[in-house]
Image (cartoon, rainbow over the protein chains, first blue to last red):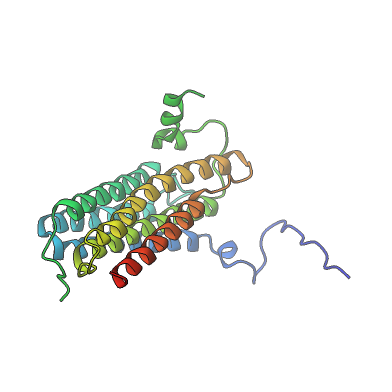
Length: 120
Length: 132
C-alpha cells in the first residue's frame, strides 16, 4: 500500500502549517538574523587578523558594521506591500568583501610572517 | 553567448531588472538570499582557518612549507567560494523569477573536492613530519 501523493496546498493556508505561511514576516526576520551572523563572521576574521597584523585587522573589522548596515536595509525595505526588493547590490558587496578579505589574508599569510608559533 | 554578455549578466542591476520573469514569492527571495549569506560565512570561516594555520600554528618539524601548503589553499578556496556563491545566487534568482527549475549548484562539489584535497595534503605533511 502506497501513501497518497501530497496534495499541493490551495487557497489561504490554515493554521498549523508552515509557520512562514502564517507569518511571512518570519522569512524577513530569519534573513535579518542571517545578515547579523555574516557581519559577526567578518568581525571574527578581523579579530583573528588583529593578532597577526593590527592594521589589516582594523580594516577588516571596519567592514563588519557596513555589512550589518546592509542587513538593516533588508529589514526596512518595501514595508507596505511586504514584497522584497531584490537587493543584488548588497549581495555583490558581500562577495566583493569576502574576496578582498581573502586576498588581504593571503598577502599577510605569505608576506607578513609573524614569529613562528605565536600561540605559544 | 559572448564572454562580455555573460559577465554583464552577473552585475547586480541585470538580475533585479530581469525582464524575462516576475517577482517571485518573497519567501523564495529571502531563502535564496540566506543561502548566499550562509555560503559567505562558510567562505569567511575557511579564510580565518587558513590564516590561523599559516600564522598561529608552530611550524611542522622537518616540513618548513607545511603550514603554507595547508593554509594558502584554504584562503584561496574562501575567495573562490564567495564568487561562486554570488554567481549561484544570481542563477537561482533568475530561475525563481521565471518559474524554471532551480539550476544544479556546483558549490557543494567545489567545497567537497577542495576540502578532500586539503585533507590529503594534511596527512602527507603530518606523515613527512613524523617520518623525518
